[in-house]
Length: 296
Image (cartoon, rainbow, N blue to C red):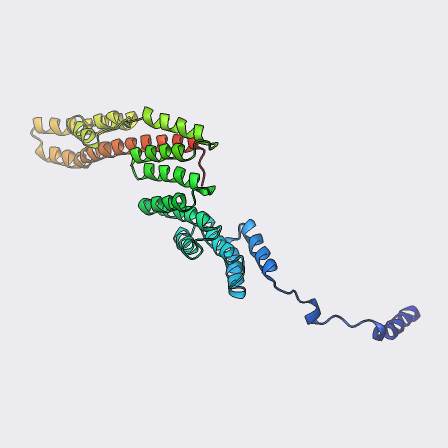
């Protein structure tokens, strides 16, 4: 007990001699352009895109005339793009491109504007954005990428000749590019698959109207074709037998139940042919993307 009391007295005696804690002003962090940008970049690196946008915008608010204002605006667009907000990203990149046309981020912004519009399915505008990159800064690292992007945009827009034309344009503009050999292989792949094999949805539907399930077989859906043949065959047979037995009420019931299966067999066959065509196009599209080694 006495020892505890002595220690308390010593603390009381020593306490006034201790230095006072520093004031808030002394410990505060001074926000500079460099600190604010580092904070925003850190959020971007961590995939915290919403917070990154907030910090880049804070930088622009605090330092509107900063040397790196165009960088911050570009990064705002990039954060929106990586966050899947393609509409906002496209608008932001367009603003950077238009207001900072002479900066080092004009080509970058034009390229990512094209990617954003591509993601939105606006193929014509995406192609225009890619063309703008090549026209305004052909020496940029993004210019050859823009040509590759436009070739794939043309393919997605079902313009395969246009796709090939952009690849030929790439070879003409950048013959020494490290991707030139990939582009040549892609052109050969396109030539080999032209015209694309195709199944006629109309023919598939007509075939299944005559022989149920045959349209499915034509479209490569063997299992569905056999099922449609058996099911519709049973309903048709049941209806015919009932009519021969002059049991018209049963024939009407069986025929009425079977009619939706018959109609569905026709529409289903047509859809199967359409999906087959889409599958062929997707398969070629995937091969082209792999051949070009193009990722975005």
